[in-house]
Amino acid sequence: MMSVCANPVMVNLDAIKVNIKSKMDSAAFDSWIKPLVGTIDNNTVNFIAPNQFSVDFIKSAFSNILMDVCKEFGLSVAVRAGHGVQSPTVAMNDNAVRSTYYAPIKCDSGKSAAFDEFLLSEENAFALTALKKMATGSVSYSPLFLYGPSGSGKTLLIECFEGSASGSVLRMTGSQFVSEFLRAMTEKNVFAFKDYVRKYDTFILDDVQSLCGKRATTEEFIALVIDLSQMGKNIIITSDAAPSMLSGFDKRVRSVLASGLVVDIVPPTGTVRKNMLVRAGLNFDLAEKLSARICANGHLVAGVMKKLVAWTELMDSEITLDVAEKILSDSIAQIKTPLQMVRNMCTRMGICFDEVSSNSRTRAVVRARMIMFAALKSGTTLSLSEIGRLVGGRDHATVLYGLSQIEKMKTTDMMIVADIDSMIAETR
Image (tube, rainbow, N blue to C red; front, side, top):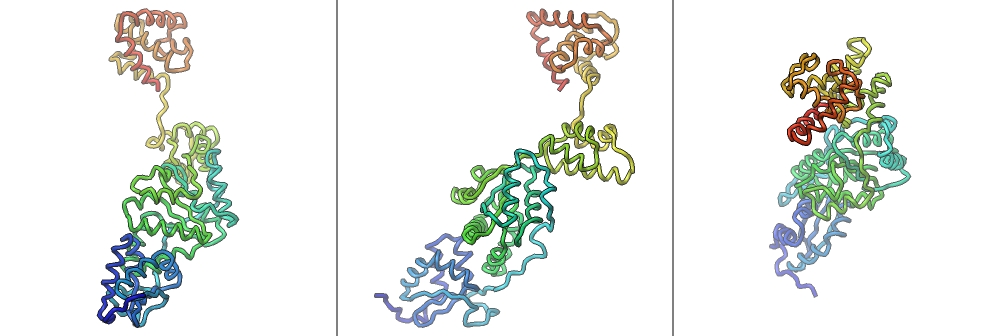
């Protein structure tokens, strides 16, 4: 039989909360119990939450702890929704709770796109198909976890989903979620923040790795993922690494993130980069040549596209390969022509190009020519005749003789092997 406190009026509600905090996770306490207002009437602690959802969650998750602690004080416990017996504008034990969460003007970027704006590669077909299905509302893979390196197209994919989704969508970056959660705690409207997020049909968090090291925020986010999944709503999460490879998160968090559908996103392939450049207005042949010289990073390719479009509009001029190489010199890898390779080799060996191309038969010049023959033969697909023409207009037989002499020299001159390898590097 429960004992009755001799003087319930003297029981301090703060002391009860301190005891509750000692028996549960501090992050969960700060999120769910600390903001509650309350009164003690007729040997009962009446905790008042701002809405019925909060009441249901607290009862399901923490009822045993609340009952055990209140029993120690000879009291029973009740949790109900409402603003309490006092006006909500009056502080009660410094735990006044606002019932409204005032969202910022935009919690997302405001951008949306259609799925046909994402140029598909075979490697990303699985992810695109899953997002299209989710956008129709016919299936839910929650949480759908998309991961890939920066520039692989994760943000564009979720913008495409946002532009095609049948229901309401809330999208936040990881840093936005952290700042909004901390703001809600500071303004004592955590419950309203939770309700605000949960009212959407789909919740998207871009760059979940931003939550690393922020324990309270991570706990709230994981609770949100579980709640939304149980409610049948969609959750889409993006990251730069797979759940199992995320550092700074404990095993439980990683397991929840991996509990839905996990799909990797690969950076733009050569074909995708080429099609992106064609979309920017380049002709097919030029786009094919440049695509091989642009890094496989969607951000970089998008920047190249913007520069090409701007050049066309501002200069009112067609873009040729020479123009593209000039205006994109900071973005594309420079292709070494065979003649450039030979000149670079001359510089590396300290030999004048004119000497190599002349009829000089000095030992140093002849040795340099033969090293170039060997390097060009190993490092390129040039024929022997083409190699000879580059090095002073020599014929096929001269190059072949030089290569045979190099093979003999390798047995006695160990330095020549290193020199040839160094020259081969100039052909890359």
